[in-house]
Image (tube, rainbow, N blue to C red; front, top):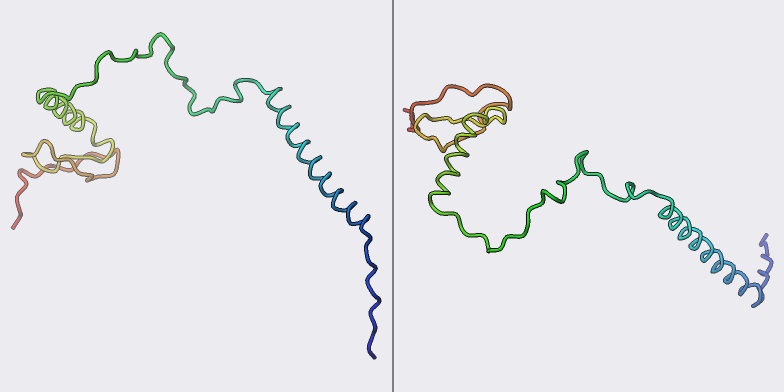
Length: 133
């Protein structure tokens, strides 16, 4: 009951070369078509299609762009830092509730915490930041 398998026909050198050459030609043709298709797409597309769209607003006009500074930027003075901190605290005092940031204590104007959900009113402040007994 043993079945004998027929011997596999041997492929000649010529048929092997033709199959390898055929694969190489096929790969070359497909690659060329893909490159040609990409180049045609670039040729026929408009300039607007090439620019990435980040937002609906483009940058400032060339006349409004800042020129290069003539000096190196200097470190802000103590007075400038104090004014910036004061302006920041003032802005947070007025607008912090929109982001859920509130002052928890009356005697600490620099202290803000995320106490509420954004857009809801801040809770009443404690008089001072002391350990409660």
